[in-house]
Image (cartoon, rainbow, N blue to C red; front, side, top):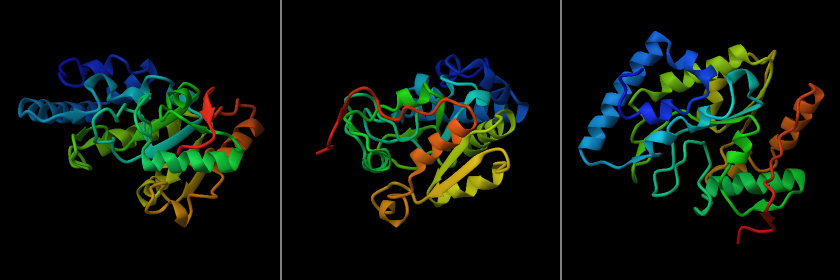
Length: 240
């Protein structure tokens, strides 16, 4: 782990409880292999997202045992100024992407909240929502370009850690790819909610109307846990 070059800034920000997962021999070896490939791409002049320090941003907020909700994405946004190491989230000031726009619309319809002006979901992560992508890096303007680097082995180990170490949380699996992760989750302890992906191509086929946000909070409250405050302090009534 200490020999990593590209990923060292990211690992320095990881919550200590995740380090046990990342230091498993097989995972550490895979990270070393990924690190070599990222370094080579950087030397070749390619621009990679997110910034190195943000690759493990999702792991910097909460220990596996304290996660309330897991929201799985596929890979980071590939445009300038978008990826920040949290699935579906973009930094303050960036344009809200279409999938997140649909998430906000469902949130508003489900809970009667205003639609946030910002696409920054850090306030969710701070409350124990693990916003984890399966693939943690991408080349600029090349969607899915790092799908074969081996990140899935790492993210699966992270999912397994939550499944194993957490007494009970909610997994939100949106889209066919995320649905395949259900087999890794112990449904006798965790709540698994599935729906279509929130992208414009599929949101109308089962994402809109899923009411996942209210179901999450009802489940948490029933188990004596604090519900998620989905809305940030400042909201607006429309995205347009």
